[in-house]
Length: 188
Image 1 (spheres, rainbow, N blue to C red):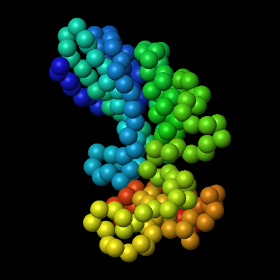
Image 2: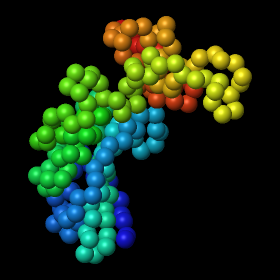
Image 3: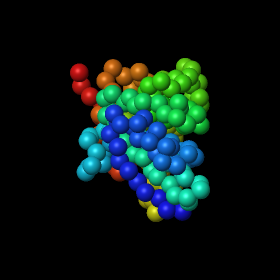
Image 4: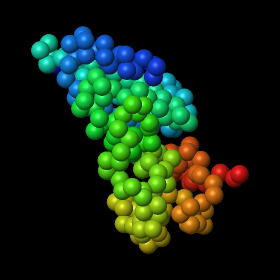
């Protein structure tokens, strides 16, 4: 099966999906989001990329439609009126990345109603990980000491404090913590 990738603007997203369906891509395969924070190049600092894959089964071809939305206002037109099957995927991405799919179903799908935050955003501090001992030196190739380590994406305990800090962590520092950086709270 041949596959092409097309980048469209967020303003053209709905129209591009509808046009692809008209062009024979009448099978909705999936829709997902990617937090591009910390990636240089084609993305502005902290953008989200939303991708959908549509298939023309008769012709044996597929298209990936990609768009970029800003982190500070993650909103995108829903495509559920074009492909009803996109509803579940939009709800999942909306819930896990805090993306607002305009015209879509905003109900929770996976997380409990009292959960606060968007766990797949790279700037989200995973509170549950902060309360669990991290094995440290038991990692392959680690030193024999038993010094406890802080998991990637979790601030040092003296910075973390309670789970409702006044300042949010700097998104760039959280993204960098995955490669060894330490997270600090923004000062207001």
